[in-house]
Image (cartoon, rainbow, N blue to C red; front, side):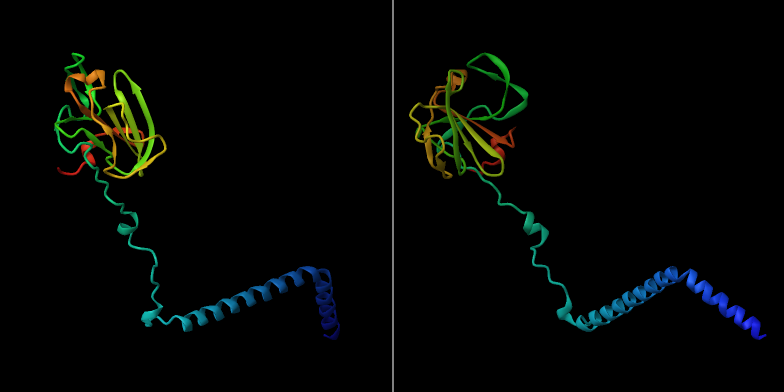
Length: 212
């Protein structure tokens, strides 16, 4: 019996000696897992103590405004380019309208405002004068860049413009006068052909013009 006990003891010692490294790794892993588990339990208990469920002050209060307020943008309303006018051709992107001056049927990507007495032309919205151009078909043309990807283009202006390229204008500032410098619409008399673009795409100017 004694010999069997000594033999078993030798076998255990031999096993430990042969596998000492593995046993060390397993032991370290066990103690590491035990330490992490204890740490997690302690943190959970501390969190429960710091933020009681029934404490109204523990509710998280967002500092961000409601989504409807954060994403809402100010409605843009244009000033009319003329104070006193009659409407000529309105916006028509797909339906053809007859151009009495040229005798042709074409689309009409703007709105014609025919001047009655006061021929001053007003900036529809605050922005920066991007360009001032001239050609026979459209006459003198002023382009204004606005915020939100909007651009307004005023054609058939007189040559006596009141602004310069790079100038900042406010809504309602005088930028020039209406005339019949546009040879493609000269039969309308003194008028303004107004075009509006959103992110480079034509849109109906009446979308942004308020009631008059």
